[in-house]
Image (cartoon, rainbow, N blue to C red; front, top):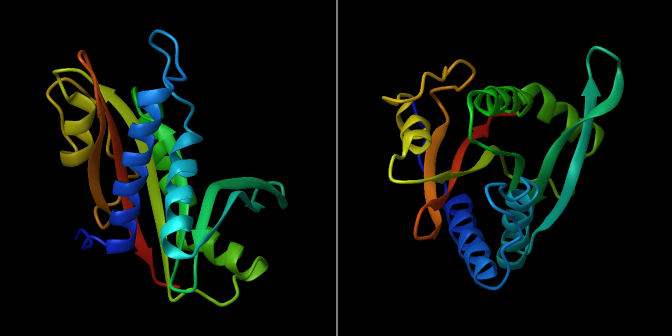
Length: 195
């Protein structure tokens, strides 16, 4: 069962996407068909969250690699204040391989890894609520295949699997910027973790 929308996350996504849209009016950091680096997604989210919620942010939060026993794995971003902590993984979503990588990221954002991080790297004061968030971008033309697949799990033109995409996460999207031939969307999914 999908979760209900959580206001701080939704407001931050909306504000951050508007900030990025304004930036793109002044600077377009891509050539031809290549897109923007996925690092921009948590950057804009963190920037807006911190400015609007008296928050803090860190990139590349380490956690244990169970195969090697070394702190060599990383979660892209953590934003937090006294009320909420949000662990974020980000991707550009444009093919089946990237959809499979997102499924792996969802798994990485599970309770076990987040509990480990919070035990080894406690936040003071401890936030009341903990969330995991996947944030992806996609460019769509008239045929909104990736957007349709993200929201419904199906698309007439894509045969991507939903394996690894839990049904108890909230899935949604935002229009970031419309251009003449295509539109930039943010796709996102999140879940509150019971720790």
